[in-house]
Image (cartoon, rainbow over all chains, first blue to last red; front, side, top):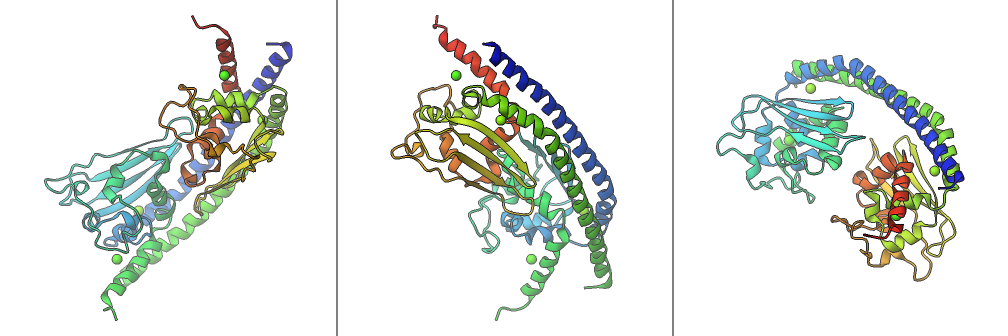
Length: 207
Length: 207
Ligand SMILES: [Ca+2]
Ligand SMILES: [Ca+2]
Ligand SMILES: [Mg+2]
Ligand SMILES: [Mg+2]
């Protein structure tokens, strides 16, 4: 290596050190902003959760009326999601988790199903999910999905809700998890309300 | 709708308004932090780019020695990437772009190839790339990839560098673009240096 190349490497190296330090400081400041706003948001999320718990079937209605998430849910899964008491999204430094909290139900023994995403930037994206303890003969993930509602299962989507939940093969491209985090969770009322309109439509006889 | 339900909806709605405002303020503050650090980083990126331009074949060596990116590059593409003068990653509010700046070369007429990602949160992920103006009979994207270096093409990767560049079918899960943005761009010297060791190895006769 000649002197000019050696000098060039050392110059680049110096730039790298400055950039590394700036990157470190930037992520620290961004984390501070996020921590501050998580604290400010918490009382409103808590209040919202308390009110939602008083509305029967709130989450299942929001889910089956969400344009993307509904496409996953087959009829038996919808029965099961009627026992979904609470849904929570928790964000943390390098990822997030979705918590599904269930009432006692005839399908499985778990009280809580958690799907958690670790998304870098310095590690391989990874997701994990609670192993579902299905009651005897109730394992919905082993049944063929019932495509009864053509509207709801339109598109090429072959996944069902519980197969999505348990599938951790492609954590960096989990559209459903993203939609829950960035669309359903920020404003579930929007979808619950359109659910209510559907109920009215369904009661109206077709002309 | 009974009075209790009406009240519940109005309570949730009030929470949503507060949350929306906090979300808006949080993203504004995060953007401010990012803008501030982009400005602080710029002189070091500029200095680094100026030094890198003085080192012959810097980027092609960094690329063919990067464990993931190298798997894309077939032998003819490597010849072409020898004309890559400059590589730049520019981040903006909802996405980023990768700029490949080329010297005049026998493969195509473009001086700059740009691949750009728009990644929400409120829009569908989308990517676009410069249409490559291949010179006659030089269209590398139409040739069968030459799998000469078994080491480099290990794994099931069927893509080549230019087919990756022009493929915009799955912008939300473009691992290569992510690796360029989050690994190659932050510290290319790391890979260039391991390239230099390879060159020395290649000159040493096998025992
Ligand atoms: Ca309905
Ligand atoms: Ca080499
Ligand atoms: Mg809640
Ligand atoms: Mg540069």
